[in-house]
Every structure is written in structure tokens, then in C-alpha cells.
View: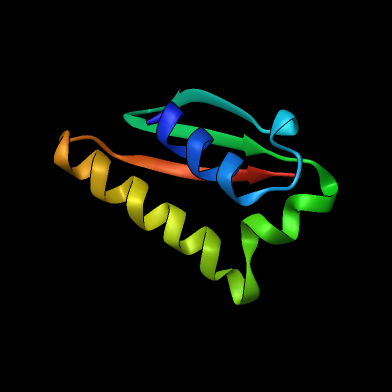
Length: 76
């Protein structure tokens, strides 16, 4: 799932070298932290958060298929 989020983020931003994705766990939930360059933060979030919501929806669909729970945190 880390590679999925990373590939989506790199396709959206102007500076793909600044994309950093880390995985961790909180209780029984997989937490994926996404960090991008400050200039690209708006591209990842999108208007009214639509892009971020779409990424979270894809992540949720993949994690549900694997019978897991995953959340995406966009870190500034």
C-alpha cells in the first residue's frame, strides 16, 4: 500500500523527489504518512480536499480487499 500511495503522489506533484511515504501501525490500523514539498501540498489536497479524499478512498478499497484497515495522514 505504501508503493500505491507513493506512485499516486509522485504523479500529482511537480517535484517527485520530495515525496516521502512511511508506514506505521496504531493498534490494529496501518497508518501511512505522506510528506511532500510545501509547494505541492495544494496539489495533494486539491480543491476542498477532493484529491486527498480520492487517494483515501483508493487506499480504503485496497485495504478492505486485504481485510485490513488503513488510514492516510498528510504531514506538513
